[in-house]
Length: 297
Image (cartoon, rainbow, N blue to C red):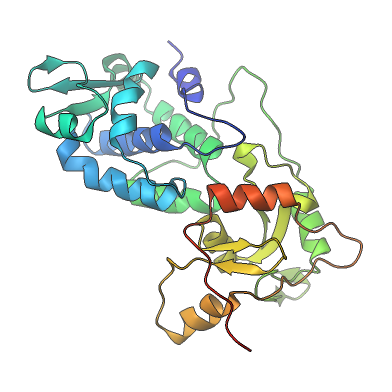
């Protein structure tokens, strides 16, 4: 059985680029726990809080529950659930999973293959990260999940996959004249820019094109906050700051909160600004909560 292929084809509710990373997050969490204890199970009542935190931090803005993937991942053949009464999930209800002692783990055949082929775990984890999250969050997710991955290349699937355009970074940074679109940072060492990155507005994993109108030149800090849904771009090309962001230090106020309502820095005349469709996708699928009002001048 090709577990890499099966993982790539997880059945998810999707429509018009809607993010539904519930199953990938649960599977990544299970892989991290498998590295710690290959025989241990994940009792729903014991891991519910961890899974809910993952969905809150890395899932879509709308409220959701980890009970849904805990039950439905079984249908993909990579996950199994047992209760105090025997094999089989009691359903996707939170109360049912708690009261029946529902415990999940990677499917038996999957676990056996991972023991025989240890490199497969890293390949599957990297595939899930690549398909469902932007690169700026990969390292953070691995740390949160306790995943220890070797810097090996992910095995390519037999099906054709989109290839990234390596020119994207240079095109975006040039369009924004090597300045962060949110704060104007333009640091260099000699002639080489440092701490500047090309951010996809609509994530590449969700059909975002490698084009200037889907990109922003951002410093490393604001790129991470943009991909976490703390920052966004409004219809008037001004910076949005989530009301959910809390920061009391002068640095947090100056570098994040004070950006609310500020116009973007760039792009230069003649370069395409962020397209409305991509801004709207980010606002619906990534940005968390309501934006803060702009500060009075």
